[in-house]
Amino acid sequence: MLSRSKTSATAASLSKSYIDATRADETTIRDLVKGETPIKFDWENRWLKGEEYAHLLNHRRAYERAFGMIEFTPKTHPESIYNDP
Picture 1 (cartoon, rainbow, N blue to C red):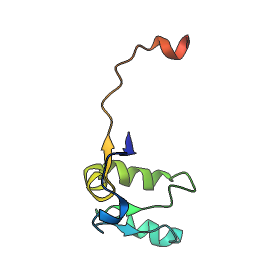
Picture 2 (picture 1 turned 120 degrees about the horizontal axis):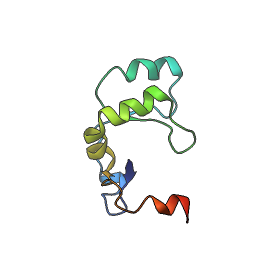
Picture 3 (picture 1 turned 45 degrees about the horizontal axis):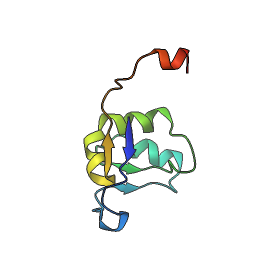
C-alpha cells in the first residue's frame, strides 16, 4: 500500500515528473495508463478505477519518486485484532 509521506518533500519541491490528469476525461485517462509516466489522478475526490489503480501499482517506484509516497512494510500484527478488536 502506498501513502503520502508526512516527512517527504513539499508539493512545491517535487519535480514535475508526472502527468496531471485530475481534470482529464475517461478517454484521455485510458490512453495515459498505457504509458509508464506517473499520473496524478483525482484521488482526493474519488476512488480510482481498476486500470488507474493497476497503473499506480505497476509503476509504484515512479509514483514514490514523483509524489513522495512511501511503501509500507507488510503488516506484522496478529490476525486476531480483526476478529477480537
